[in-house]
Figure 1 (cartoon, helix red, strand yellow):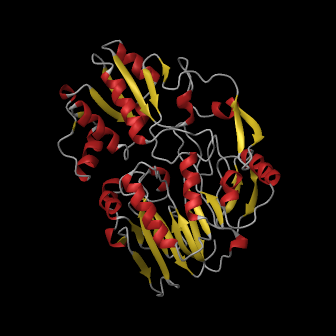
Figure 2 (figure 1 turned 45 degrees about the vertical axis):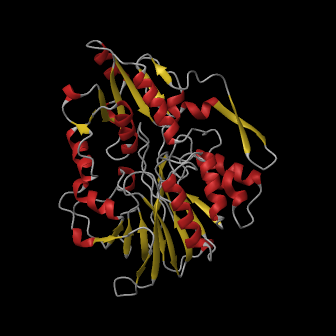
Length: 431
């Protein structure tokens, strides 16, 4: 491994400073209570939540990055170069930030996971802040949340999706309601439901502790007798569970997610998987502005109900395609690198957004061929000086000398490891 300068959402040994964009588990793979390599920089709220996720973590390593101001890491024996970093609200989950870095390597932006909707006031302020921060710079590289970097992803704002969920609950007054969520995130959705329906919401005990740390003390409960609406971990949300609950009393489940499988009607015993999506769309013609138009093959069925007892609503904490496109136009970087390199619907971000970057891009056919090659690679890949391994061919090791992304194997709920390492004297040609 090269002599590293900084790592973002990447926790292998070898860097002088580490940055955490937020506490979702796919960004903390490798981080643990015993981790102690170097200072860890994060937002104030993430620092508050960190000991709950990692008990006994050495808090002397934590450095706070307040949004809205520059932070400077001065040269020292432990940190050999001057680095300036600016944190901006990513509007993804509590404590999530995107990071602007300035140093000898130029100007680079790491978005982490983000959702900047045009209708969101917090996102509007974050956009204004970013424009002001990079107005005198060319952003050399944007490390992009490319989760939904395909034109087929045209889901609504979180407010409209929340309204739909409230309507579903209201239209089932005699039903218990089960909502699948993660251990962090979707708090705004649950608050909107509670306030609109004037009810409390049940959460599991560990989630209640998180809610209290976030300052929500009166809306959530662990007493099932106080409410008919329960927020449960996504891993416990299944067709079998909903069918079992309906043998006792009428119950519906709601999955707030823009994951691909939400558009497919499921049969009993069938797994919730995103793989169907790539088979439901085929490559179409190019539009006049150079964007590939994908054509749907057949009918994906109802958009919000794919089982007798389960609704899915595209409430997403990641930006949709149009929002990503607007973001890239705003930043106008030299080039892009996706931070999500493992997905059943993965698309190299330069494929659709390269035309919006400053540098001359390869012809569309080359990008298309690159995309096809990437699709053929196993999800388990690592970059940044480590060996690059394909799960299909474990006997072959390749060396990667460019800024990279670490990726873990897909699970049913799209567990991914993300992150980059910025190394000293690492030019863009080596990326």
